[in-house]
Length: 73
Length: 73
Image (cartoon, rainbow over all chains, first blue to last red; front, side):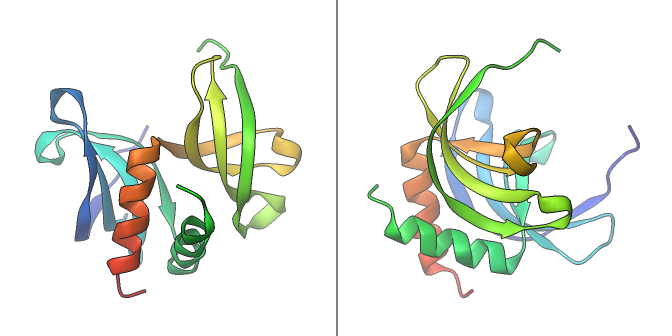
């Protein structure tokens, strides 16, 4: 697979920290020099490796926020 | 890769609908008969195919909700 170029534009915070220091983070990331998207993903320490995750547009993130606020958590 | 067994226990909603009917959904999913986890993921129509996504524990989902509520979206 071709190497993916990415740049973490903004770091909003960490949702959890797991084994071996992997963290589930919320960031704004530019992939391959495209416009940055919101991103929820597991990261190894120092962002040395990335795990699976999901990218979201601003509209999707707002929809997610509104959905979570209606859920009984 | 071995086939993954999953069961969508609860569907909370759809964040967006993209090309060819793929939807970004929030579900509670049991993977390989384990305890269900929250899941944000793209799905083809009828859940025929799954895209990349992220699974979260209840604690991570609450942290995400609180983080989103503090963000200027």
